[in-house]
Length: 224
Image (cartoon, rainbow, N blue to C red; front, side, top):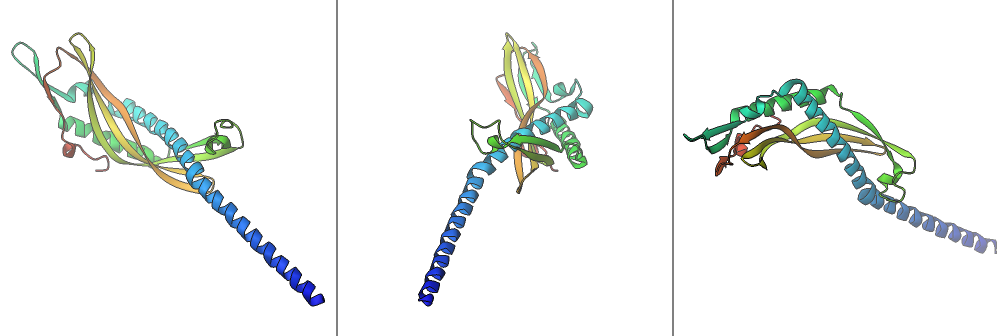
């Protein structure tokens, strides 16, 4: 009789152990799934937005403090006219573009290396969980965002009509930056892209029928 009771108790313990194991496994599996497909993407999105602001501020400060001169926009644009002064061709000034990119990349790399751009940010847990209802509630989670390096730098130009016989020529720097994101239980490296206006000039006269862009292989890579 005692033996049967012992066997029954032992079976109950085993059954309960199996149930606990299965429930624990299911909870862990759900946690991993929820973290991978909800929490982690939301963390990346929040970190990317904040990292873009950090990089944009750094670029604007670099241009203002060291790189940009009032004549720079004109130097980036070579214009050919006919005898009557009508614009026949607009061509990008490749050496000036390369120098500007090189200087800007070097300045940003120096700022990243100094670590002065590291930023800590507090985000409500509701935002990380992806809930619109409680996005501003819950305990705060601290994120640390550290721009690491300029992985690539490109160049883009644009013509914008301003009025009769007036066209604005805009010059953009397209930067790809690697940033490290430190959050509770995770460390991630993301790559963000910033497109920032670095120079502009007003062109008087009609927009020419053709213009020349700089070939991609002639533009310096930001890491060179």
